[in-house]
Amino acid sequence: MVKLNENYLKLPGSYLFAEVARRTAAFSAAHPEADIIKLGIGDVTLPLPPACVSALKRAADDMADSSTFMGYGPYEGYAFLREAIVKNDYEPYGVRIGPDELFVSDGAKSDCGNIGDIFSEDCVVAVCDPVYPVYIDANAMAGRAGDWDGRRWTNIVYMPCTGENGFFPELPERVPDLIYLCFPNNPTGMAATKEQLQPWVDYANEHGSVILYDAAYRAYITDPSLPRSIYEIPGAETCAIEFGSFSKTAGFTGTRCGWTVIPRALERGGESLYDMWMRRQSTKFNGTAYVIQRAAEAVYSPEGKEQTAGMIGYYMENARVIRSGLSEAGLETYGGTDSPYIWFRAPGDQDSWSFFDRLLDEAHVVTTPGSGFGPSGEGFIRVTAFGDSARTREAVERIKSML
Image (cartoon, rainbow, N blue to C red; front, side, top):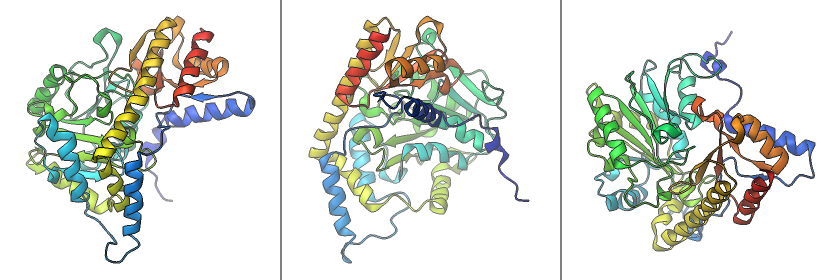
């Protein structure tokens, strides 16, 4: 009989957002008259920027002409996009990353999950708690997480992020091999300062750890003093891999395009992590579609920059409305100023899923329960600002009335 990967059998229940969708569908079936507003899954609602759509159409025309047709592209992505990313997302912040240190992909989620392919099954993994579920689930599937004890994984180093420490983790006593950091953070919505990140870079370099830095929400930072990249921190080029994304910056959640930076200076055991990732990608991935990469390149055109800035402003106004409205209702709220996520404590010591169900049942608003992001998320709820503006305002008013 064929043997299965038993690590999958250890995974508890379903993926967090699949469970949110299941409960929402069940409620909708039982109450077909209910007008449900979804502020749970962080999917965008605005269409692609016109500049990107135009570029997508032009690229499709290229594929219809033998003189401009593109077949297999470079495994690391086309130079035109890698150069645009470096010029616009790194050089303005004084980061010296070359286009030849960057890989274009079909999204940061894929790379965050697949990066473990180049590391040993024995690696000890540390995550912020609460945390984006992919970081833990991907390592559980690879056999690094240990066993699920009903609340947490036995071999994961959980780094609590709570109100007491400002939702920023402390350096762990047990030294991990891989350290996942995400700022601005999903789910708490909190951003990190250069002063907060420097000790982590120093710690990783001292112990030989590798930081896996998810910067998917960098475009939502409003404070100019905050770092947009881990490579703004001295020493990061020898200890950090960074993931970027067009999903929330330019509405590419369904179009799929992101990137991963692996500096040439990053080595472990005398081996280049860049070379290992190139070997992995060239074996398992044939690159992001040419038409998609042309659309992503258009994000950096003058029109694209103006249009994406408008989109980000739209969502950040939603975040302001949510945060101010929930605060007026007496809720303890965080995030929403340098991030499109708002994190709030459920009132009356209610647990996350109970308050999720109450919000769905009484206000007909879908959120995401904090406990789904880890043990320290219990008692909290995450709300996304990626909804329609009018519907977002209505959802906030419903919650205020409910409370």
